[in-house]
Length: 569
Figure (cartoon, rainbow, N blue to C red):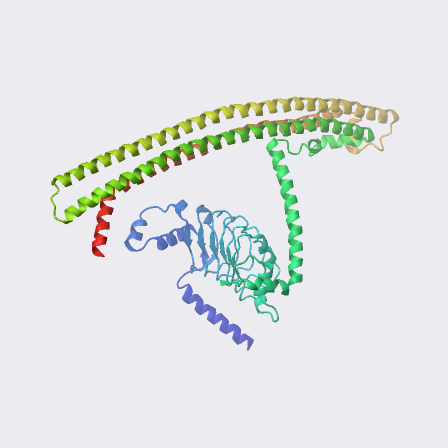
C-alpha cells in the first residue's frame, strides 16, 4: 500500500513538472537567462524585438522575475548590483546562496521551492519582504539581523517547534507573519496564533488577517510563563549586545586614533611572535627572562605614551571635524533660508501675475467664443496687457534664477575654500602627531638595541661558564652551536634585533600610512559630496525655473480647458 502511495506521489510530481516546467531543462541562473527574462518581462511584441538589438544595461535592472524556470541553483546575480526585487518562486532551488551581494534588495520571493534551511541572508540589510512559503524549512534561524523586514511568510514548511519565534522580537519593523501550514500550527491543545500574539505584541497581521486588539492581552495571560522566559532571555541578550557594541565602539575609537593594540603589552608581544632567534635566546634561563621582563616594562611605558598621544590628538582632530561640519551646515542653512525667501517672494508675485493673466485670458476666450474679432480694441488691449505680464514674469523668473545661482555659486566656492583650509589644518595636525609618535619609536628602537647588547653579555657569560666547567649537559640543543662559535652568538642576537626592529618599523609605518590615508579619504569624500550637492542644487534650481515657465506657458491652454469643462457641464 505504501509503495503504491509512493508511486502515485511520483507520478503526480512528474505530471506537475510537465505542467509547470514544459520543455525546460533543470539548470542554474546564468546571464542569458537573466537577460531573456528581463526582456520578456519589460518589453512586449515589437518593442521587445527592437530592444533586443540593444545591449541590456544590467545596472539598470531593478526587478527580476525568474519564476517557473526549473532553476536548481542560484548564481550570477552579482551582475545586478541595484536589484531591489527578485522573484525565484516555483522552481527547484534547494539552497539559499550567492545572493550576499544584493544589498539593495527589498523584496525576495523564494516560495514553492525545496529549501531546507534559512541561511546567507545577513547581508540583505534592506530587505522588507521575504517569502519562503511552501519549502522544506525545519527551523526558524539566521533571520533576526534583518531589521527592516516588514512581511515574512514561512507557511507550509516543516517547522514543528516554537523555538526561534522569539527572535522576531528583535525585528522592530515586522508587522506581518505567516506560519500556518507547519506542523507546529496543527498541534492539539495549542493555538499558534495566540502564542505569536503573546510573544510578538507589535505584530499587526497573522496569516494576512488583522489581529484584534483584545487578542494579545488574552494571549499574554495564557502564555504568561513562556513570555516571562522569553523576555528574560531577550533582556540578557540586549545587555550582551550593548556590551559588545561598547567594546566595538572603543575598538573603533582606538582605530580612528591609530593607536589600536597599544593600550597594553600587545606591541611587545608582537615583537616575539614569529621570532625564532629570540625564542632560542630565551632558553638561556632566568637571567634572560628577567632581562626580557625589564624589556617588556620599558616597551610598555613608551607604548602608553604613544597611546595617550593618539587619544589626545583624536580629541583635537574630532573637535576640528565637528567645528568644520557645523560651520558647513550653518553656511548651507543660512543660504538655504535666503534662497527660500527669494522663492517665497517670487511665488507671491507669481500668484498675482497668474491671477491677472487668468482674468485677461478668460475675457479673451469669452470674447472669442462670442465671435468677437481678435483685432477689436478691447482684445488688443487685453493681448497687450498679457504681453506685459509675460515680460514681467520672465524678468522675475530670470532675476530669481540669477539670485539663486549666485547664492549657490557663492556657497560652492566658500565650501571649496573652507575644505582647502580644513585640509591644510587637519593635515598639519596629523603630521604633528606622526612626528611626535616617530620620536617615541626612535626611543623604542634604542631600547631594542640596549636589550640586544645586554642579551649578548648574558649569553656570552652563560656559554663561557659552561665552557670553563665543561658542563654542557643542561645546555639546550639549539644553543650548543654557540659553544664553539662566537659568530653564532652574534648571529642569534643580530637576528633577534633585526626582527624586533622590523616589527617596530612596520608599526611606525602603519601609523604614518593610515593617518595620510585618513586625511586623503576624508577630503576626497568631502569634495565628492560637495560636487554632488552642487550638481543637485543646480538641477533643482533649473527644474524649478522650468516648472514655473511651463506653468506660465500652459496657462492659456488651462484656461481654455476650464471654460470648455464649464460649458460641458
